[in-house]
Length: 308
Length: 176
Image 1 (tube, each protein chain N blue to C red):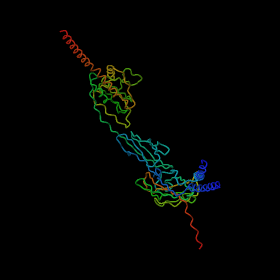
Image 2: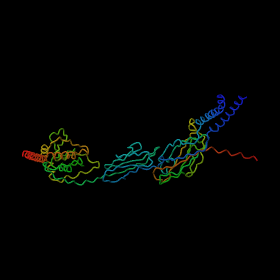
Image 3: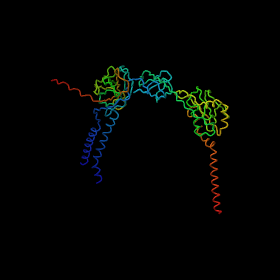
Image 4: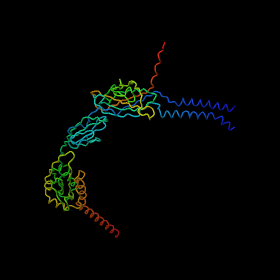
């Protein structure tokens, strides 16, 4: 009897359970709505714009291109017209150091492209003011260390074009300017081999340097108006003699690549140290003598006092 | 005593097991054959650079990938106007169609958006782009033309989609 009850109860409860599970398990297909934003996918084709705008400038420019909504921008700077498969893909600002024309177009997903835009940049950098040449310090005799730096300003290597004869001038006449164009008076100091421009930094003076033309085609500065300097630099023999007499240390090699290799600054600092040790050595001896004499006098006095 | 307790608990245990057994096949079936709600799995840009005044042929074009519950056979879309912040392209320049709708399967039979933020005519879905995936896979092509004179720039807008079960058929007319 009890077993029958249990059996009926189990069957009943199983049916109830299945009914409930159906109610819960059946998906509820209610109406659903989704919303979103379409961004970055719709652009009205436009030519790229350039910033700064095309025109004439007195300094090198960094040009950025933009075309809102485009997938890419292609450009050229050699005068040819780019396409979406040719030219350079724009990634970052374009350095315009000299006059040139940038042609660019914008490209879009699906094959759309703008017409080619042309941007003409004229870079016209004015000539720098002539730097007055310092008075030569007299060939390295007793010139102060500052004199050696002054020679840098008078050197012809800084911001000069190779095709323009650069003034080879130095504060003390011991300067050598090496120009790849070979138009500048070039002194070959002893030890120069294979045409390598080895410059012996004169004591107290050095003005050596060559440089590539500036990216913006800077006109060469006027030669130093110092007649004495110009006169000295045109006498190779005298220069060589001066170098031989006043070269105490190893000769630095003059760079010819860029402004960072202009050796005037480095050589200037070297010669400044040499000036302290060389020209003013007398004063060090004098000071040492004074100290020695004073000490001897003090010691003799103490000895005399103790003896008395 | 102990046996009596087990007999007393047996119905409850059986109930729970039955519920689980009953839910399993139904839930499994739902996961394989259908989905619970509408979802957008992606938007593929087809043509993003439009020419003002170039019509739909030179307008924007996207493909919307929807997953729709199989029981919901009506899909409506609505769009806002597209703007670049200062200029606007009206939503009324949009049309859409889908190969999964025999009634609106091509550009010629496309459904047109009539106004911004207004639901379109329902697109009746009767196809499935991928029978293997759960639910109904619907690829909707959305095209938008840009009116003449629209300034160049990047434009953006919003969309909304809704899937519904078809309304019940009207009751047969009373013969009386």
